[in-house]
Structure formats: C-alpha cells, structure tokens
Image (cartoon, rainbow, N blue to C red):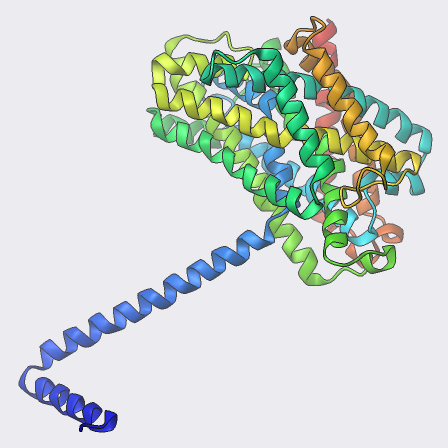
Length: 465
C-alpha cells in the first residue's frame, strides 16, 4: 500500500527529475498552472463584483429606465430622423443634470424618510403643492394614455391579428394587477429585470451601419441651427428626460426600500449611513447613465437609417419601427418594436404610481406599495383612476400626439417649480442636516432649474404661437 504522503513524495521526486532534465518544460507547465489559477480567481472575483453591483441597483435603475418610455422613444426617434447626428450631444449634456437632480431626490427620501410631496407639504406652501400635483396628475394621465396606445400599436406590429382595444385593456389590467396584488418586493424585482429591455435599443444600433467618425464628432461637439422646430425638439428632449414624475417616484421608492429593509418607523428611516448614501449614488448614476445611453443609441440609429434615406416624418415610436423594417432589416424592426412594449410596461405603472405618491402625500392619505388595497384605498384609487382615464383617452378620439402635447404643457409648468423645491430642500441644513448638497451639486441643480424654466417657457410658447 502506498500512503498519500509517499505518493506525494514520489510526485515531487518526478517533478524534480523533470526540472533537472528539462527546466524549460517544467517552467512552461508551472506558468500554465499559474495562469489557470489566476484566471479562475479573477473570473470568480469578477462574477462576485458583478453580483454585488447588481444588488446595489434598485430605484435609480428603474427610474432611469422608465424615463425611456414610448413617448420618450418617439421624441428621440424624431430627433434622429429630422436632424441626423446633429443633436447627439444632448445625451451627454442632459446626463449630469438628470443624475444630479435624481440624486437630490433620492437623498431627500433617504435622509427624511418621507417622499418629495410630503417634504414640500411640511416646509413650503401647501397651495403651490396642490396646484403642482393636480397638474402632474393631468400630465401623467395624458402620458399614460399615449404610452398605452403606443404599446398596443407596437404589439400589432408583431401580431397584427390582435384587436387594438383588447391589447390596451390587457396592458391596463396587467399593470394594475402587478401594482395592486403583488408585494413590493416582487414588484420591485419585476421592474428591475424589465429595465433590461432597454438593451434592445443598443442591439438595434449594433445591427445597423453607423458612421463612427460622424457619431463621435456630434456626440462631443454641440451644434444648433436655432430653427423653431429644432428648438422645440430640444425642449422636448429636456422635458422628457428631466420629468416631474421621475422626481416623485425616485424619492418615494427610496422610502419604500427603507421600509422593505426593516425601517418601519420614521425615526429609523432618518438614520442614514454613509454606506447607504454611497450605494444610492451608484444606483442613481448608473440608472441615469443607462437612460442617456439608450437615448444616444435611439437618436444614432434613426440618424444612420432614417435621416440618411430622407425619412423625416416620424411622429410616434411605432412609425420609427415601421420605417426601420425595409431599411435595417427584420431583426432591427422586431427589437425596436419589442422595446416599445417593454419600456411601456415599465413606465406606465411608474407614471401612475408617481401621481399617486404625489397626491397621497399632498393630502395626507395613507400610502405606499408596501401596503395593500384595504390599508391604502385612496393611494390605490388614484392609480386605478389615472390608468382608467389613460385607457379611456384611446377611445374618445384624442390623438396620441395631442395627448403628448398636453402632457408637455403640464410638465413645462410643473417641472421648474418642483425642481426649485428639490434644490432648496436638499440644500437645507434644517431638512438634510449633514447630508446637504455639496456646493458643486447645488450649482448644477440651479443650472438645471434655469434650463428647465427656459425649456418650459419655450415649449409652451412654441405650441401656441
């Protein structure tokens, strides 16, 4: 019998003999073994880091993804189709503005343990809040109606035989069912994975033939022609990228996450650690980066395919999908249409939920997706009402483009006012204590307020004059 130790000694002797006879051969084997071990260790570490990063993502990811709803896709498609690569730089321009504002919202939720409307109600005029939330309700409801219609039209591109009315009804009921009858943990899990549908637009861009030199040139160097149509589109991009419903949703979801992790009282929620702030920043900036990357690739795709072939009359997201089919192929067409449906399923419940959070906090109702229908009837009642009105708008003859125009007017009025409150709240030592804004963050916040004020005035002026 040869014992394990003897077997080990024998192998070592054989190795020494091989080294003596052929040092190069032994060295090669040692290097190969070391490379294999290093590869395994680094692979395991990479997988571990990726898993930890994925766990960090949450409200910031879903908020950023919801920004690229079917209405936003339509705006970005129009931009690329009408002006080619010229306005690609807007993706880089809006990214820091959007990320800074959403970080402020998230920090307000984490530090105060309340949603945005709840904080405005405590520290500022209730009447201004009431007016803003009612306008928000109107704007979001029109947006819900337009998005539901776009989802149904996009589904018909894939399955023409299915009735339009049945599709809208089905999407509405599915969305309501997920919000009302699932737990917050399951609902958040669903939203997080649904955000991955945005990758379809990156894949579309990879399929089509894009001039890389022109792409990078316009991505870095700003260019504006100052025409009425182009200025209107720029205002539209600012409005759909830095949108009021995202502010309310982000803040409230941070509170929901705290409750989900055991901070069930206001006092517990107000105890925020440095680690929580750090994770929030990773989540928010990642979500906003993904949102703007998707905007970038939608504009680039429509510029490379539609603008280059003289197709500039794009009014809706489904128009863009149809126009891509003969020029970019079946795969690009399918991915673009699928993206419309997926982003709609993500954005529609967030639009309804943001409206409900804002109104419930404004009027002091019981609220939260962590509660059930019986515990928060008014909160869920607003969700049901906004979804029902959005559904009905598709059957009363209101054109979806007009619905989006009404939504743009509402957002143009609300956004600068809410942004003003966000910057003031997040910069207040009374509200935020040691978690107030860094001076640079405050400067970017005020730049965003001014930019959105100008964009809102320009949008409303251009619509009526």
